[in-house]
Length: 110
Image 1: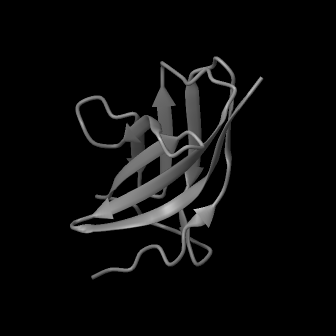
Image 2: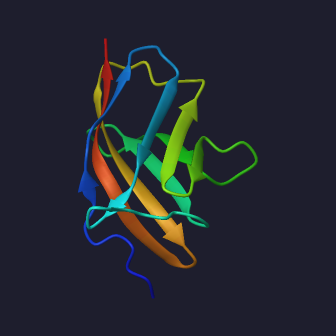
């Protein structure tokens, strides 16, 4: 087994209200860029009651998440337009191992 993520990074994502989502970032492990080649990334966005309101994934025919070695990009043409604060959990999967890599608040800002 490979332990790629020791502890989830906590980082908020801020998206302008009504805009399409185009967010790029990197993933780190112990301060070093993580090579995500061959991994799958899944992101669930929940309201504060725990209901999933949006999901993104790097799998499928038209993935909303693309991975390029040490960086990833989230792209969505149908953004959330609620003013509510949301929580998100980002998971990386390699083989049969799933690790929470990042979590925080998904903030839609006017």
